[in-house]
Figure 1 (cartoon, rainbow, N blue to C red):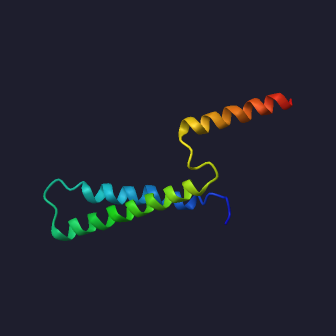
Figure 2 (cartoon, rainbow, N blue to C red; figure 1 turned 180 degrees about the vertical axis):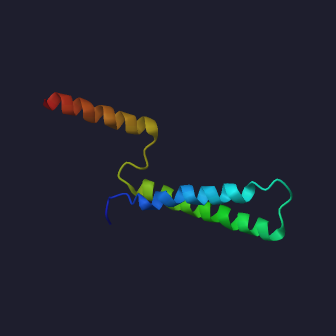
Length: 84
């Protein structure tokens, strides 16, 4: 499996979020058809977010929290300086 992150998988997130927002902007009560469309759009966004999270977690170090990532970056920067 390639370790490259398919950025195109993330491009769709904004589009799906916009659809959800547009469908939910109704000022009044939603019709049954509008509710169904909003539910489908929300589920699509949820699935896309889940897929994006899976892609990120599959990256080396993707399971690390931000503090742990910062520690690794600091260690690598110190190593780089030591080699200079």
